[in-house]
Length: 218
Length: 218
DNA sequence: CTGCCAGCTTTCGTATACGAATTCAATTGA
DNA sequence: TCAATTGAATTCGTATACGAAAGCTGGCAG
Image 1 (spheres, rainbow over the protein chains, first blue to last red):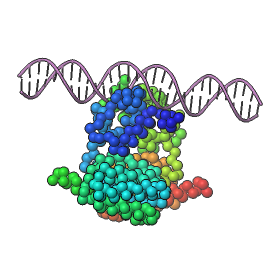
Image 2: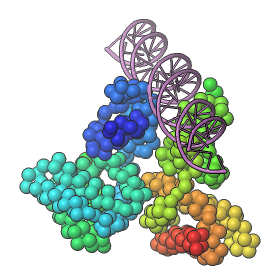
Image 3: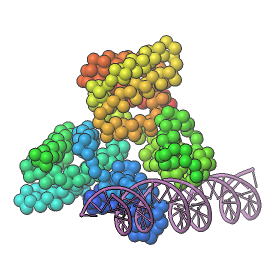
Image 4: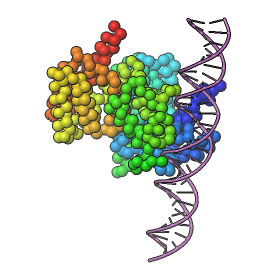
């Protein structure tokens, strides 16, 4: 019997939607209504309601008077989350450095190669997928679970932002360079170098975001 | 159905229980069952269930097969939260430094004086209250809301730990000294000094906790 | 006397129903 | 023609009910 079949419906639905959100499979404008989702899963409103309300309390969804949607982050919130990232991610990645398995290193290597290829092809979708792979790999290796969960909590929310910043052609090469350096630091188990590179990575993302925002308005 | 206020029952119940938890009015061993609480509030199980489940998902309560109780944090979790505190609180307090109003400074001064008096009287309850006042004052002045909420999220969970560490007589004087220095740094709007002192404050708490733990086991 | 099994109680998860609030739309009046 | 108002539809919050799972208890066998 499947593991998922044994667990409660509300938890299954929660996991399914969280996965969809984290993988960016949900676009702005999508609206979830408990009754509709319930019909899709052949259950009543209640487990769906539990799952969606939980997701909205955790910030993954926005509970409006007419269904649940992706939250629209304000400029202010995005900047605040960048500050959180600067504080947490360098240290978290440093902690993860010594926990990475050989499989993890292989995944990272593969992802970085995929990332490098986008310098030629220009496929932003591929760059995004590779970046997500890299990030997911080291985050899952962070031994401090509280820290890891804290990071995961806000990452889903700024998914759209990160997707957008990857379209910043100015930073494309810098980004891939940083990823390559990070891989090398991970391989060498050089936690201090990883910490520094992660900080520069977050700062680069913030730069791209601010530049993008300036373009939009200017 | 009663309509004691405009807001929804589940949110009212959530707020009431969160307040009780944060003020430390709930002791280990207390058990909450939705039907019992529902009777107390003259509502059905559902709003109570929503509130208690939300609190448990946020880590304030532990959902067992026999009601909701205060969570028993493992040694590992406590240490992980101390690491989070080291990463976030120094910077958060530094950011708050320039946001403190005159009223805030007055509150801090009053609280530090109360703290100092406990050096003579030895009233740990009073020391705890004063420390909470100090902490609440500067946390509420943190301008980065995401950062503030992240800190608040784990603080309620380690309430019991902090209460316990304040009973560490060895560190009593050190603690009050640090609070006095922090107050001075706040008054002088010296964010760098605040940052350093907060780090030392968290480290002192961690030391006390580890010493306490060693005593218990040794 | 002790350990195990059955059924009994408690508690939870889910289903269904209904009223309230909010939004949408259509009709009416200026 | 356009705006306002009213009715309909949608969606949420809460109430109630029922079945299932997890402890607890008491009796029975060894």
